[in-house]
Length: 148
Image 1: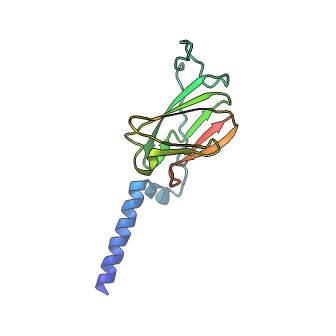
Image 2: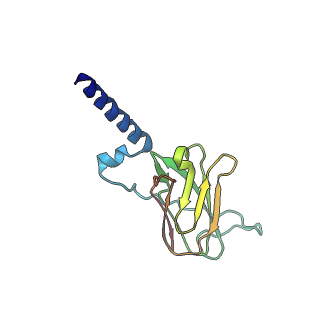
Image 3: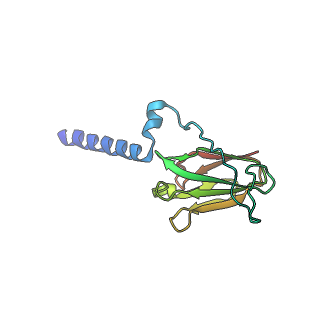
């Protein structure tokens, strides 16, 4: 009987440890599955191929750059919003995108990219409007790409 109690305690501690590691403990405590959206406001824009400053988010072929990180098992920013026609450049932070979070999937765009220090850029044209879930291969991350 005493062995079963000890085993149950070890299992509970192990599961709680995994949940904290994966960032799900705060979800259980707060009751909220989705983190507050963090929208990155771009600066004046990166240089375009012609060498002039682009106008991010105009929907006319401009480039909009975001740095994607993982904080407590969630993507940061949680929401990336762009206009249709924009070239989206997501630079993954390989220091924080580790474990299952190092693979970034964007549903609806057929994007699945493993982020490494040697190859950390996802770039595509946002040619479809809508809200597209972003997650790792295990479904963790709960990010969104919103194209308007």
